Structures are given as structure tokens and as C-alpha cells.
Image (cartoon, rainbow, N blue to C red; front, side):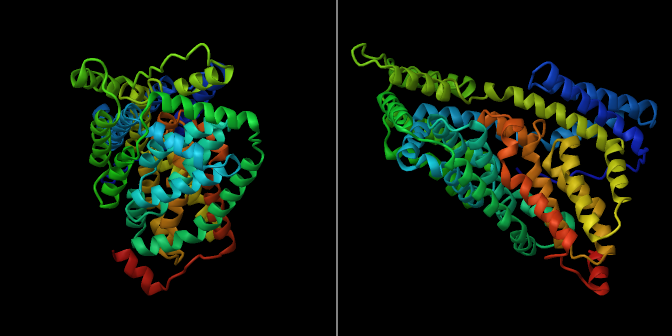
Length: 499
């Protein structure tokens, strides 16, 4: 997910009170939608808030509709690559289920992972994969899907599992040198990539250790008695009765990781993983009646609408309540999961969210809110806290982690240099909050993506995505105490200002 930073909005400075009106409307509408109506579909709330912001911009701020429309379209264009990746992730999940890749990973995981250590293992696996590929979306959409299925089989709270997956996935999105946000943050702050990564280890290391400790505690509360082990074996038997689980099915995940480590962009790498799985599935799995023609027809339908899983009928003589439950669980996990169609609701949510962010940005209301926060700064600690809060706020308002890095980075760079703070302090704040908090917001592109691939909403997993909210708190604590805060001389500050 890499694109050029958004252009600076035209110089508008509405009052902060006017700027907060659309925010208040959005928060109120979301609260009513979730708490009163019990719905997780927030598209209409975002459209109404965008309408309020547009009316204020045209009538009070005297913006032209053409200018606002250009800002709205530009904001949406920023998300187009993310939307394409989301659609391809849907195809990849369907192809991996049809070919047997996901069932194979589930069976291997059930055989190798102990329930008590599952959450720690899930987080660490996602850390390793995301560090290698540099993409939280790719990690969650591939190994994350399998880990969710394993957790479901072990009867572990899906919020716990999704939290561990999100924490591990965003570790790499924050720390990997091939991650787009890891490169964007130092570019906005005026630091270098190596300086940035080294400086981030001071915040992410304690945050990760605390998160792993909490996952160990949560995992230790899970009682994997004989019933759970019997259920696990029943799920394994059910999957093995439907799929041929050959080690050759590990090739598609290896292809995806290999291509991304080799610096191939995420979109073609995911497409390669999708179609390689489809072809390998034709070789490994028995062909349906009708041969290759019928297989092609099934694949075309699955890539769009998800794979329709049909399990073999149970022999009445061998049917047991445990096996019946296992069949139901496998159906819930794999039947019609993925596919482009399953991602359309998330695509709509992202389009609505980016429209709201585009109007707020182009009208100057977003910048006005950020500047009002800057006025409260009195020292280094409050400046860093303000940066962390602003990144989170932009993630809420603009619904995009790139804007949560670009806008605060652009606005606070001069303030950091004025206080003779090294630019790597700013770049670390941008990642600690702008990158990590994006997945905690349901209508943000990242929160929507996690929901689309993991099947668990941000409101459910956010309390357990420990790394994502502990890291910003550690960053604020360092700012208040001065620990690891690097300072520069007047001459160095002038050099940075000139670049």
C-alpha cells in the first residue's frame, strides 16, 4: 500500500468550533447507529456527516463545491490502491480455501499449537510474517485467517485472537524497512529510514513484551480440557475428509512471502498467491464431475462470491454430536468466506470514510483542529502528547493512516525543530500513533480491512490489540520523562529546516 502523500490543502483557517461541528455530528450518528440501532454498518452515518461538513464549507466558509469535490475525489483516489488490495485479498482467501491451503494451515496449527500458548504464538507468528513482508493487511489476510480458524476451534474468544493477530501484524507495518508507513513517516519528519527504525525500537520493544505477557495471561485462563481436544480432533477429521492436505499447498503462501520480501508490490504478489493456489488446487484436490471445465466454473464463482463448501455426508452409524458440531464449525469457518463480493460492504465503508476526510481536509477544518491542539503545547512532553493525540484524531476523522502520518507530520515538524528536537522523535510519534491506532477505529480503512478478513469488528478486538494502544502510551511516557528524546544543536536545526 504505497502512494504519494496528499497535496497540501488550500489555506483556509475556519474556527475550531465550526470545524468540530461535523465531528460531533459524526460521533453522535455513530453512537446512535451502534448503541440504539445495534448496527455495525456506519456508511450512512459517514455520508450524513460528510453532508454536514459540505454544507458548512459552502455556506459558512465560502468554499466552492467544485473545490470540495476535487478534495473529496483526491481523498478517495488515495484509497484506491488499498481498495484494490482489499478486493484481491477477498479473492485470495476464497482461492486458498478452495485449494486447501487454509484447511492445511488450520490442521497444522491445531496439531502443533498448544491452547495455553496460542495467543502468544499467534502474535509472534504475525510479527515475523509482517516484518518480512512489511504489510499488516497481507499478514492478517493470509496467516491471520488461519489463526482465527484455529482459535475458533480451540474455543478461544475471537476478540482475543483477532487482537493478537492485529498486534503482530502491525508490528511489521511499523518496523519493517519494506513497509510503506515505515518509509513515509521519516520522509514527513525529515529523518532517515535507519534512524527512524532504530529509534522506534525503544517504544515497540517494551510494548511488545507487555503485550506478550498479557497474551500469556489470557491464554493461561483458557482451559483446554478433554472436550476441547476431542473437538479439535473432530475438526481435523472433518477437514481431512473433505480436502487432500498435501505439503505442496504451502507453495502459495511461500510465493506470496517470497515475492514481497523480494520487494514486489503487494497487489501483484497477492494475485500471484491467488492464481498459484487455484492451479495447485486443480492438481492436489480431486476434480469435480465435469473435469477442468467444471473446476474453472467453480473457481470463477468462488473468486467472486466465496467458495461454497460442501462436506461429505456422515455415515449415520458413525455420527456423533461432536462430529456434527465439528461440521458446523468448519462450515462457519470456510463456507462462502472471502471472494470479491464479501468485500463490497467494506469498500463502501472506506469510500464514505475517505469522502468525509477529503471534505474536512480541503475545507481546512481538519487543519484548524490540529492547529488548536498545537496551541496547548507548553513543553516537550505536551508536544509529543499533542502529536500522538493528533495522529489518533486524524485517523478518526480522515479514516486513513497515511493522512494520520502526513497531516500531523507536516504541521508539527517546525514545532519539533523550534524546540531543538531531532526529527526522528517526530517520525517515531507518527508511527507510534498514526500507524498503530488506525486499526482500532472501525471506519478507518485499516479497521475496516481487519474486520473484512478476520470477521471480528474493531470494537471487539481493540481492547486486546495490546501493542496498538500500549505503544502510543509508552511514547507519551517517554516524552513526559525525556527518556530517549534526542536533541539537536541550533546549527543542526537550521540544516534540517533547509531540507
